[in-house]
Length: 265
Image (cartoon, rainbow, N blue to C red):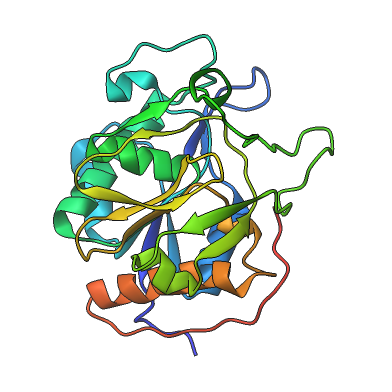
């Protein structure tokens, strides 16, 4: 039964620009992230991209864990590069907010789970750098950008294998050394910071996952496990493990298992 010991998880948002005569500028985020985390026992807290450090810190202090979702490209200025023509739409307000939250959490050893863009953001927050576009910058790259455009693909398509590095936190959580994953990104991790290690690789050698070099629960994967959690128990374990760590960090002990249900987009 759910109770007051459920950990509070911050889920960052993305800017939706104004639609004239229809909608003012908004902060938004996909429902599936919220539903997947809630199904593992989280109390979700949607975090605005507020340019107010004191208020952002007050929000952060009430969180037991940080979830960094997928989304638009990261501004190359965040890792001291000029944008190329292949870099897509960026959201500087989101970059600023997430880098701040990730830096605070890594300093405080507060649990972090990051997916797709989130894994890249975690890398940048720790001092690493990205490929702005794999097709033009990464020799020998396989196809990674299976975006569900015009019905050509779905978010559940398993499109390539990933090799998991033995004896990492990711390998222990998943309980395997290889998984098939979905893939919806055109940027990738180019350089890691010393505080992170690579824990997974695509067939072309691209880093597909990162985690803390220490024993902290700081974990990022390049694929979208939230879209696979209903059908792949290993992917559900990523969220369960994160929620259990967040509960322990907050001083509680949480082991909730919700029924598996179909999630809206």
